[in-house]
Image 1: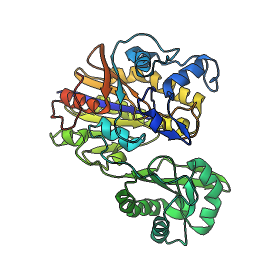
Image 2: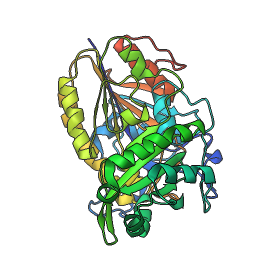
Image 3: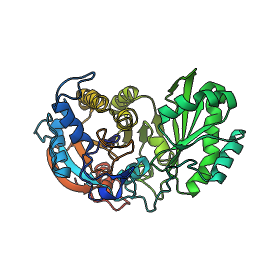
Length: 402
């Protein structure tokens, strides 16, 4: 019986979104943003040689048709990538009115977002008084710290000492539809932080805020570091997704990375978490051990979280090359009848202004059905295609490209 694997390289966009002019980083529209092409161009110019050297080296994903996908999406080129198109390849365009994690993942799983997300203004204070008061009440604190748009690493360095001294939670947001709470794992308590976010999330979800995110950290004396115990409390998808379609057909659904959080554990049997290097081992293990008929859904977040938001072009290039170097191990672990799809959920061009995601099309690359140009497709077509491969009914608006 066929198996399917969907791997999201978080934020690896390829430009060309037709509505990019409606999405912004500060006052600058995302028109012209192109995560992969711009990284490749900077590498080819010898300007991203920190910890690596020369043109972007992605021979394995490249040979599936990645360069052709970039050119088909945006008309730009990605120098250094091979010209071959030996796998399934195409370009997916999102219709949901967001450029964030839930919108991208839900639509890839067959459910476009039917509402506008709520975003907090880039001002101080950023949050309505009733929200701030409720956070303080739930935390047993006098008030909250932060109450602004901020980088997660910057704000804990700035407010970490005061947080430890006062016990007040650090609350911040971004251009995404998120409410983030940072707290020290030892002084505040990890379980206490998770419970705070869990108790607050219904209020924020009713406002159409996509995620309440727990951001635990450790350290002291101005030297703080976020831990891997992050947890997202996401609003539930508005209808059944690919995960539900598969699970309701008595098949096993395995999640790797933050997939369980994104889908509020709906339609998911098991979750494996960790840093991306750990997730790679989990993915290889699932390729070896997942039962016939199963679906594995994986997200590799560090392209986005460590390099895209921080506008670190060389770091992003290193991460792409690291992932590509593991491709032979993934391919060797596949069985006859498997379909392995690689895609992304949005862009985060590290050469762009600001620190927010960028509205872009994404590549769709596949192994298991031979060379195939599927052209311009919708995000939801990915779900329909995986459903067809698995032999389960597609219940969303997508059309299979198989």
